[in-house]
Length: 407
Image (cartoon, rainbow, N blue to C red; front, side, top):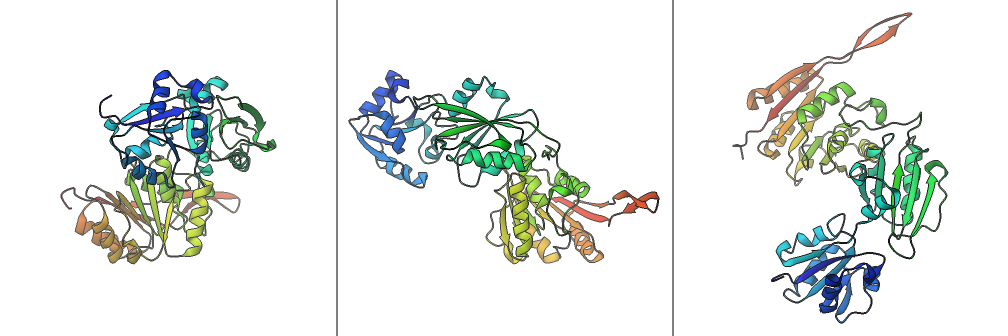
């Protein structure tokens, strides 16, 4: 095809035997073939020069672009645009200059081996360091999960996470080197997991079974307070649910959680959509570490924590789509700095519990409009042998949207 000098070819564990004649012809005609060492070995002998991926992967795009116009092949596993390198290269090289030849993805092969309907399965990429906790979000009784592993240790890490979360009865299926002569499939209960010598190239299936001690993560905001390790600085469940509703998380958006405390607002923002981002700003290092532990235990290890005091700590942070200012973090300077930093059309929500902080929200309301709401929560608690209502401290909440014209 005219102008398509770069071919990205998905290759499986069966090597050339699994490729069609067109893909083989592209490899044989290429002057440069780039891939992981495993991919290059699977391709066999070639006329063109072979080169390994550079690290980070983005650096390889520079090498490839230096060959622009010459026939170049990049070898990847399976489908280049499903947890693959295709998307990385497409950020630097126009898709109109590429010819993409996918092979069955690891997910497709795994679903075929297990007889699972792929459209009903949660698919995850745990193939980067520190991502194993991402599976926590999806642990609901009866669900099925397929996850790409980082290495041979990942299945054990998943088993330990499942067991610690009360899902130890779940079945784990470890599928190694799918599609090749080394293919192997083994099954274990998570709580009894003792598989060893797991091939680094593996995909993990999980048939989720919840026990009595399970703590599934709801798909709506307002997780139980007991899910969060805290020292008392925690936006309580009912107020948190209202706060997230006011923040209106959208896919791919960035939140500043100013005065993050236990991290509950930022964590539930991230749980709203896998592409969401959140930065927690916290002056107390002990609380910042606690917020990070909560994020990991609740399946959002990508919560970003900045340690410092607002407004100074807000400098040089990426521009947010929404901002939450917690009780006791505030004052006019913090609100003013947040309003300036907020994207046009973005939302800001601030909670206050003291009269002094309420004055700051009242001033912001007069300066920027929006709404003021007073939230009062009462819980039934025992008084002697009887029961009465015990009121929590009332919360004043200011919610405003920055005009799109206010750039």
